[in-house]
Image (cartoon, rainbow, N blue to C red; front, side, top):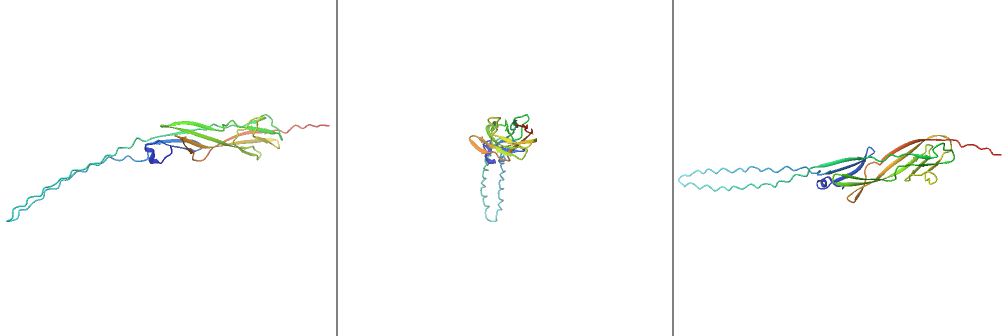
Length: 219
């Protein structure tokens, strides 16, 4: 779970973020505090006995007994657990652009657009001794090439379901662009956290050729 570096000694700390338009999953355990060095015993230096000078005519004084203190050994701190870390890169599904009619769409008639990019991306990622659940959802931005713009969370569908349509006013070749923006959360041991970093974006292009509608004369 997400935690401070010091907590990663006993727990497995997980982070999920975006970098270079990729989804990065990292985990570490046993890091955060340096391993303490074992304590060393200092040598005990015994004091030298004092030299007594016998005065005249007084008798020589008896030397005082020397008391030697025992050295107290400091407790040895056990070294920290070995540091473990892992890093995984997760790629998201590539999108596409579909439209109907695919052959010779006409001016002043609606063109149906859709994509098969999924509306949800989920992944179960084992890393070290935990399992990370990733949950992402996309936002679709359609640019139809003639200045028309449409933002949605729907995939769209062909006729007659529809949902995403656009009508061109003049015949030409248009470059249609679909921008997909992914964002979401990840969960570890029941704790849900937003994925940090910039959203992952994808850009898909496809050309559509719009033809003039046939002219019919009536009496």
